[in-house]
Length: 308
Image (cartoon, rainbow, N blue to C red):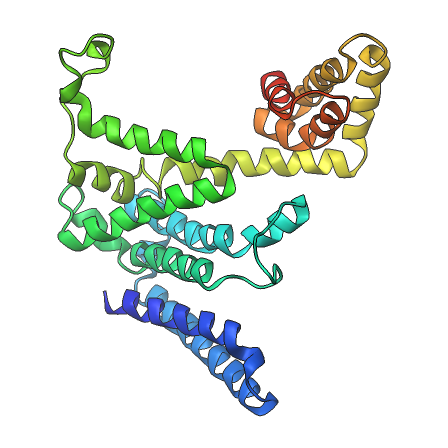
């Protein structure tokens, strides 16, 4: 726990240094940079020492602790980017940022990024103990797990949209409210014995089927490679070739742009094997094309999603 507190403090210090650096004179700014660099090196040295002292625990791929530890590192490095890069993504998309200076990261989003990294550090520094108290979380685990789940939902809302965040919240509520569906017409079929909030948090935060388990594993081992391959095909011109073939086959007919999306997604899917890769690659071209031809954005997205 002291290590987690130190990580939180270091994160807030680095965020403060980043936001206030331009306010200092060059000499003080250089001193601030030096202090931040020394603090970062100290953390790396401490982490290296811990891993060296108990290196066997960090290379045993058969243990649940190893799975949680590796995915905790992945989450700690990626989830903060949701908050740090949100404004940059909005600028690239041409969306309104509602800020006077869209080039700077708001304080609140930097705080959320630090909290996200700190919550993952709690998993990283104490992963071997989670195995021993699996199924019996203490109060600290439940409190931090609750904040982690809420932060994931907020990150989902910011990066994907409110509907998916609401679906996640409803799924969590369904786990707890199952017994209350008994006797309600239309909901009897979904009734179950229900689970306590502590059981839900334990499963979602500390279990290998939760945040730091199967979902991140799928992203790291399957989705990433398919998406990377799809982007590679588009950058090398292979994806454009498929779209040109689809345009020649169906572009002349009624509803041509939608048919082009379907045919091109089918061609790319023959070699990628991933609906996510199809949507990310061909959708980047076919969806704007359909919108330009007068299709509603919802319909264009639905066509690409179903075609992929």
